[in-house]
Image (cartoon, rainbow, N blue to C red; front, side, top):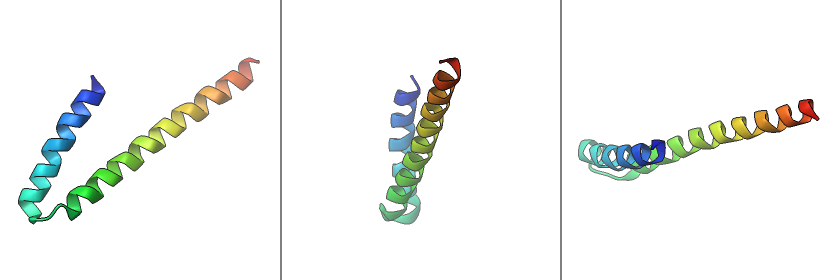
Length: 57
């Protein structure tokens, strides 16, 4: 569900940024920023799971 929301929001947001700036440059930068945020959240969750597994072992 969150993935579908993100896809829908990302498409809409890129169009809105293009309408405001007249260029996709800012929209691509926005996409990169959100992907980096997603990567950091995923890495943090994986790190925490691995740490919990080591503690439990």
